[in-house]
Length: 166
Image (cartoon, rainbow, N blue to C red):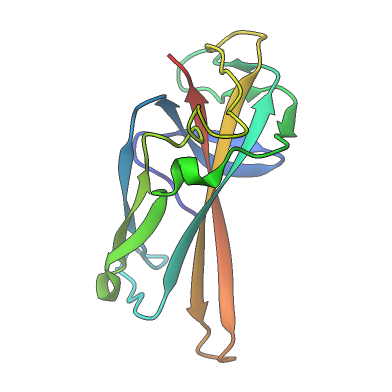
């Protein structure tokens, strides 16, 4: 299963291709989700569950060589400690109609972990700079019962967000 968001750029981190959307502090986004089979037919997702998590990383630089080219991200390091999850508690993925496989992913305006949270999110630089930037990798976890084994299959889809302070 792969997920591509409309209007996003493609980003590869550690060999994993993911959608990448730039989000500035104070912006919020709702992305539509549509689960389909290999030929584009809507899937019945009744009984499936969606969950979201966020991990914060520091990149030592981010550059955009030209339009329609990959984003180049420097060394990526997992932030430790991670920002307080209370700062982005409204991050969510929800089915609006599970029988047709439709839903949404909501990225709240405080995805930066809330600058007053303990610990605060690092300051983020502008593009094409050697200064540190923050990458937020939001993961949608899809759980469903496998018809063949009756076991729960879990699939995690990472989505990259470049988060910047203005």
